[in-house]
Amino acid sequence: MEKQKDRSKRIEDWDCEYPKGWRTIVHKLHADIESVSPGHKITQVKEKLGRLCYYCAVPTKDRDAIRKIIYSAEEETKHTCQVCGKPDVLKPESWWATLCYDHRNSKEGNHG
Image 1: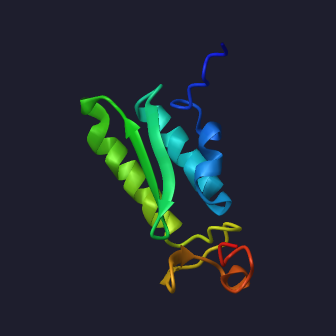
Image 2: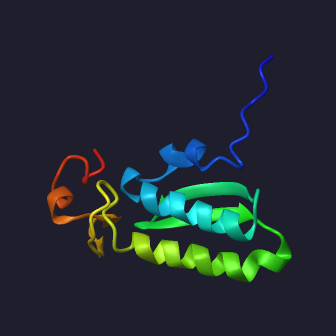
């Protein structure tokens, strides 16, 4: 039986769990956390209500610094198109999404 791959450390293994337009933000977030808490365990990375949610397990001594890093990245995603990464703002419509003008009415932007 093949051993199941451990997704808890490699950010690339989570890329399919959140919008591709945020990939640069998420990879920088991961690197910033690694600089404070090397080898931290990622427990979940996702989009919820148009913003990034990044959850990880870190030592107690690092939690305050890590919370600030995560909050900063979450705020940045509220101003970054989920599809292409261009600047824009979170807009509540029939669902919450951060989409640039080009993707607001596109098939990609309409989740379908």
